[in-house]
Image (cartoon, rainbow, N blue to C red; front, side, top):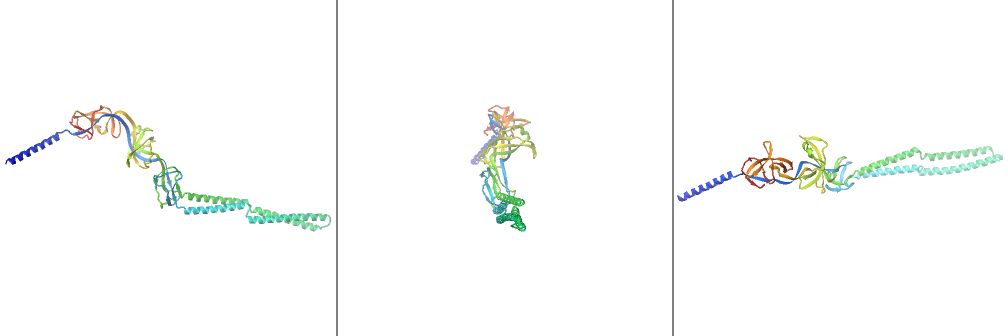
Length: 405
């Protein structure tokens, strides 16, 4: 019996202890994280996002159709101006050029024949005939002169003289005919036609050479191959995009800023860029160009702003969606508190401060701010503690237990 009473008393004591503990816990002040008001440096920033693009770039397109025989570069490779990026199959183009060069050689040879006075065999034959008729004319002229002298001494007849004169005239006529034939071998129209045929053949050769050159795709500028769209064996048509080459240091970031914030911007403001794909990296630059107009972007009215960002390692890639933080103001010695400490209460901006072990509401006037901190112009003193965290359940005069954030 005594043992049972002992167990009952122990149980009652335990229940009393538990009840006391519960009451103590329920009546204990809530734990609230506080931060001290401190003096320090604060950068007033404007956060936005945008897309990276090269300052100077070119999108290369195939100039003719064909099958890719060789890709000479890799994505990310640096190339010089004129470097070969890829080759198309060129056997057909080489055969076409060889045929065109043969036609040029034939046309040039035909023109040289004409400019030399005609075909050599015909010219030699006419020249020999001219020499023969020259001798015949000279012989006929001597015979005529001799017969005329004999006729004067009545040693020859008039008929013999007439026959000698006819032979001379016949020889002269033959010589004139041969000279006209030699001239006819190289007429002006023939020469013009031969020159035209040569020009036509040369133009066809130049076109064939151009088509062969188009089988080799070259970079028109020095830079980085940041996009490569072809592989060996691919078939491309004229105009198909092949690769993009650009200068990647610096790069340009194109961002959109809401219209009310545009007045905070000025050329030359410092910029910090972050990229979710490389959270360990920061890139720095400056504001290059203010918006030229305000346009609609969905439900927003925005201005397009251009930033220039240094990219010496070429690791900020064109096309990347990045975060941009534009520093519009730098506060060097201001009262700074975390932004999460700022509350709105009855259309009034303020903070909960710690007065002893209780909360007190304090209206404040704010200045510049960043993503995580804000400047206090009026309402607080250095060293005062401001409440952090959710504002649910906080009230003026609430007893609290401060803890470190």
